[in-house]
Length: 93
Image (cartoon, rainbow, N blue to C red; front, side):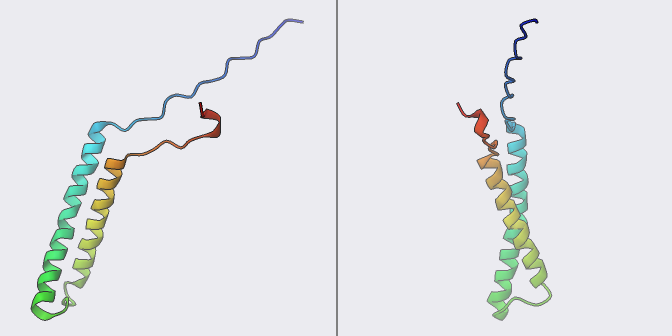
């Protein structure tokens, strides 16, 4: 019988790093998404200041602007924080 050696263990490639261009694009789109939120605060605040409440005809637009603004904050946060690769028990040093 021949002496067969086991194959060497496979090494995993390093986790994918997100490029600087993608991070800049995410942050840029996040800043653009903050603008509707700022407009929603402005128009909602003006409506509350004038009438004491938000007018029913602009309330959905104010809500939509706030949701888009929150999405912009989340996108900027994700761009700055970055994505972490999951840790596998077998890959610990």
